[in-house]
Image 1: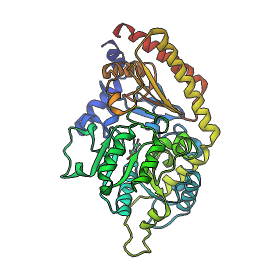
Image 2: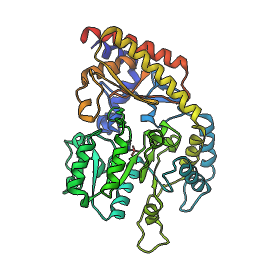
Image 3: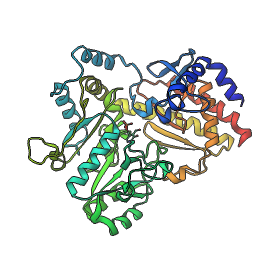
Image 4: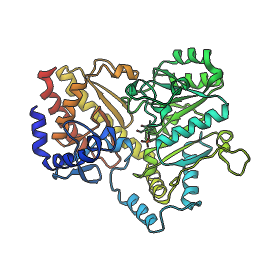
Length: 426
Ligand code: PLP
């Protein structure tokens, strides 16, 4: 209660804005994850590693628009490239040099991608990858992991997370859902239904569900099962591309048939892309009879691609390693606090992505994340906001390349303070 009072005292203008916004948008927002209690902040400006709200409060941004702002905000070089593109006309129904340059860059970075198509979101990327898999294999179902986030289209969204939504008829018949890190269930499903299944769709590291890493050998086992039962393996690397030059597939040494991307490749603008084996992607070639159509008015527009190229060119291995080592530092600081105080907190981390869970044990799948105490996460979230640290309401934390040791020191101190204050509640 005291934390809510502090929050309201610190953010009166955000409160006013929320009251107006709520008249026009349900929950005063246009994206479910941007809502948190008692009301979301209104951000005036974002620069580097910081967000500034309309009340003049500064926050270190450990959310980075859910991992997408890998170089922080308003990065000078990226902004310059986007501005240059703006002046050249932003979107026309024709090829542009940036499309060719970026497709080459991404195919070189992620060698399993022989050919690629751009779209406008990760949602579209997974939707088209599923369509490509079904068309290529002439089968109509997919296997996906419970609680995985692949965007908002029906096939992506149908699982235990969306238990309040009503879906069009028969959607559920096209989806088999398995827990993450459980290849036995997948083998069981395949042994019964492989004739019907086009692909296994998986995030190599579950992101939004709580940064859950794959157990050793799990992804490799999925590759083997996909080959054995003649289904495709689709990696959703929308979040995990930031983990290595060639994404999680390079990090774990497992090669998918198709890959979905978004977030960082747009340099801060709406984007998606999917690509993979030539024989699959060539189905989209409109010079061939019976090709697979792929529309999207703003696919591969000049501003997005110019910013995306600049972003990916800047994201070299040194920057990735710098983010990773700062993440380890933050993880160690939080762990130290947790250890000293016996708080039931577990951190999961892969590279520059981590998640805080109020559980004794590391979750290995989505169902296990539900053991995390939701109320405590909410309390920690508001305590962090009141002290200038911005993370996801559900505990997702990630770094950007512009963060400094000082940011980590500050965040470590704030976590310590906030968690220690929570001790009497635990
Ligand atoms: N796939 C994953 C792994 C994601 O994390 C997201 C978004 O958070 C998506 C797909 C959907 O991307 P978008 O929000 O661009 O539609």
